[in-house]
Image (cartoon, rainbow, N blue to C red; front, side, top):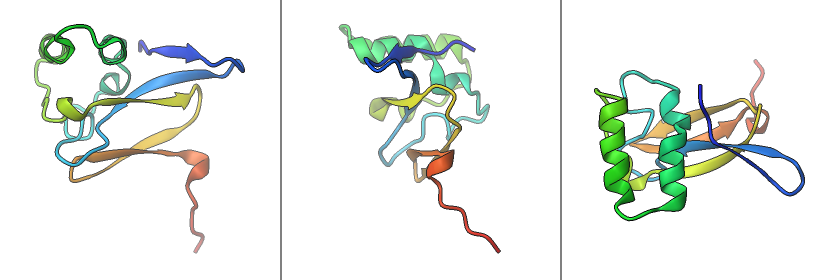
Length: 111
């Protein structure tokens, strides 16, 4: 699966993850396919970062072609979040508001 990477000055490699951190509709969480490609799509990431003219319309058109059954309700709030390469994480969602939880940052309870 293709991903968008950037390397920080300290050498840490980061991976771009797409989420909608606002109430309304979730980007990956509200799509039936739960396709992980939606989380990492480098074309969408590039358009969001560079913001060329009509970038939202271009993302919309690209997604309709690449993912024929996609729900694009979260497109307007879509953002790129950077996570260190190799870190395990999950997307949580409440009423469309997506957030990222990194595995070692979660405080687990023991019975």
